[in-house]
Length: 263
Image 1 (cartoon, rainbow, N blue to C red):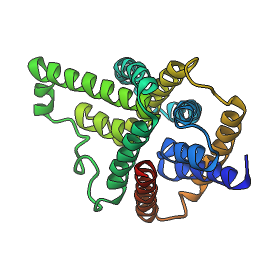
Image 2: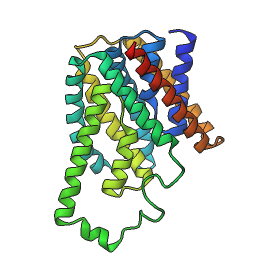
Image 3: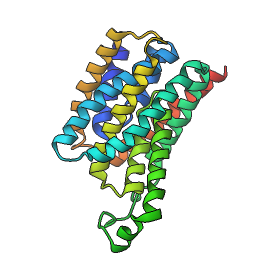
């Protein structure tokens, strides 16, 4: 593992600490293009790396009361089913197709980072429970939302297993919009769900692709160390500037992946 790859491992952790997401989006390109790991192997290893880092972050959020365990269990149940299916599809699909879809996911994440500064999911005061909200939560309204939660969880899990991403940037808005979960709890609960999805995805690849456990352990350790540094830096740097810079970085890397696969 050369110095550049080690720096990228630390940089990935710093981004996790600063932004709370982005781990797998940098892990896979680093493993593939800097360390020469085969794409399917990189996807599997990314799931293992993110599972470990997400578990540590989720425990920290749980200690602060920012995890809804019941919601995580419901979302996680359907998500893990999707993650298992995603791994089965990923094993049989051409690696170039997986990387292309991964690049599309990166573009979607970049859009989230670069879009204009407005309330991310709902206006101020939306956390307040209104009478009409309680009415909508009964009968057909509740059933409809449960179906949406199940389908969203299954879709995000399938994506996680197929291309090796945790899916936090999709899970958080889903929790906020579909269940009315406050942002802090959505972030903490999302990390638990990401852990479920990534563990299932990683186990699904076991036996089908080779895993370099030494590299996985070293990269994970560097990423975790970087995440602590990123958490400290997050109190000193402009969050909006960081988000925009990361968004531009994602566009560049995604474009490189598309170009590389088209040659």
